Image 1 (tube, one colour):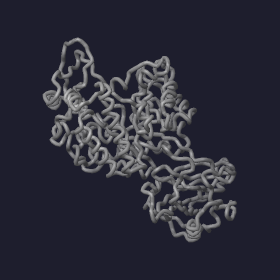
Image 2: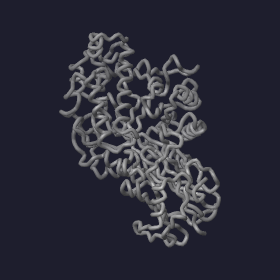
Image 3: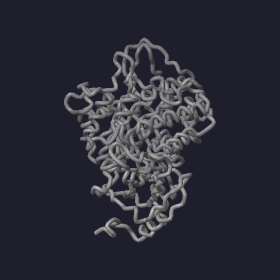
Length: 572
């Protein structure tokens, strides 16, 4: 039986706190109307009665923001700090306007950083010169601005790439290629940290954990680069024949590959020293299995490190979209990351070493050898521990070229994903550039697809698990405008104040508005202190569905846990 017909299951402390709702102070510049405690009722999340709102919609709607080679941001190196900030704000405003809820920001494009670091130099993509500070902390700026808009920030790391072929400034003295030269190899015009070198492993792990500890990020993210994609020696590129420091020195001194006339052949990654060290230590694995084991151990270590440091931060990986050859569905063909990148993605899923997988399904729906729906089902079948699947979409393929896609391809892929909620719970666009450029009207397509707001999907959220650290007051102001209602939501106290969970800080208010018999959903970011976060909004007094008759609000915390809904029935 519900106490007083409304508050089933509430503790005595909760009742005491609810009584406090009869006393409401001012909120910002609004003139509040006092709300008596009896005018609020609680709808448990499981309550589907007519007086309670429907379930909160959840969908991970994300976009990659690449900094390497200035693919997405900043648009070119050497822009002033204010112009860089302006571009970042424009991106976040577009993401917010489209009702997307997460960005995957590349913070370590090549053993460098877009944040102040004692471990690696500033990325040259910011200022045009590696090691030169931009005059502010870009990562912190992105996080602060994203929070104001209710957008998640996942820090995207390249764990092994140490220098891109498009890098042109001199390598700084504090770069890993100069500080730890034996851990760095030249391959295909790039520099790479050797995944089999323990010094390289320790360095990359330290970089990731440094960012995790210092910044309020929502996720740690890897893409598809583990061991590098194979380089084929042709007349336009030559891999230096000598592994080791001579090759690294050549790459440091010249960003332009040498030319060769040798017959075409695939070049092996130059990890002979670390391989021989493994063999000398008594290692029994084949070289291919040893390489996979190097990556496996690193992935597991990062996952466990993230969970030990900040359990609510999610670890996700976006691998190449085709699985290992011995498990592929009939008719699926293509590159083997298992054999060439030494990425045993199926093992990571089955061991639970990640929170979400974002396989890069960068092919059209009807391209049979890499059929989008078949590959989506494949990764679902491999997902025995039910981690979350957020397919990566090749939105950048929308171009004004003969082979460029039309927006309808992405529209179709999204429709397919949404038709399989048991398979995938969101998606990620690569990258933000076509969205900002409005290529072929993709912005309008996404606006229609994302017409309704959604909270970011939360991996591994147990059924019935919710935030228990919230009491909310709802302040109504009817004097704001004749046809509008001003609402303020205020999180006033933590029920776990004696021993609060580290991840209980509020991220957003989930707000339901009832017009007539219809509920409309909105998300408002929480502003203010963790124990007294507030948010304000103005809503229509009436829509075509009817007059505003009820407001329901809950709080979603860092882990994605949602509190029960507090509902205020409004007088006509």
